Image 1: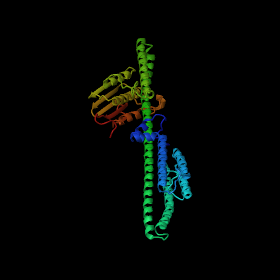
Image 2: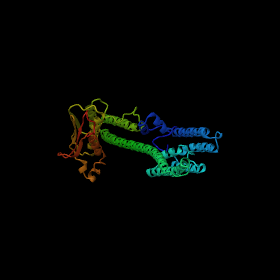
Image 3: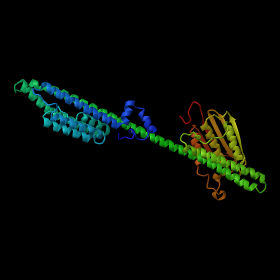
Length: 459
């Protein structure tokens, strides 16, 4: 079937979107959608069998009502069998040329009617309805309406011819050649009812095809939307990973640079202390490398069996302990920072803990990188559920207000760290403010709202 939503048998395995679509249908419908060639074979066999039974019935009727002794099959019978075999084979091409095949079938029917002086013999069998259904299911509304109109014009014209023949024969048999109005209206009523039945049947076939087309287009839209959703999800995941990589690299490199500078200065006066600083430098580098591997492992391992879905927010089970260790890692670089946890225990929510960890990490990284003459940095996490406040205050001169000529910097970087913090707190219906404080330094204040009953980020 020429659609991307229903792959044929033997094709590539179904993707997740296609598997979801197939659940809309029953077992028989799913088999038909995935095996169009087998369906065509069944239709062809049904057409051959139906025409064969009709031909046998016609021969039997001729034997009963004929005065002579006719042959089992005359030339007309063999023509019907051959042409029906041909049209049954054309069913396999119905998805490519449905309208053309229907027109060819009607033309052949017309030729047979004039050649045999009767429209009781069908050249194409039931294939005209099969082709009408296929046109309605695969083509647009205008083409489907045109196919229905052409088919009805055929039935009207040759119904009129047959009506004229029948009326003429009836007059000759009942009145000896004298027209009778009563016979005319009775015969007209019979033909009118028959034509109405055919019109309704053709309409049912047409609507069935349109319904199939509507379902297929709907499935294609669902599949397209699913694929777009998957693409957006992948994009969001890459964005999240990029943000995590920014946090990891910015924090780790800042700490390592500070440790390297400290080791270089201390090595001249206190070699033992310099060795400790170098050991801390090595440990920080290894930790950063492991964190980067965990982050990139999400890209390499879709199942997530060998890598967590996000970088760890620390090794301890208690979030406050992890934050204290994070603060201690910055203190080892010489940053005068202290940590205080107030209020309730931080909830055991991985995403929440990671958000708090990254907010503190980003704030301290900026203080270490851009702060000037910093004598005190205070990190406070206050938990009073559902509210959680994170405050990082330093009393140094903010590099944002420093001149590039004197500081050697052009400002507070790209601003991606602050943007990342805003995304994290927004996920918990919170907010973040960052700016100069009253003591001339810099303050970052983040507010998050967490609830066990209400999913994060829901409204």
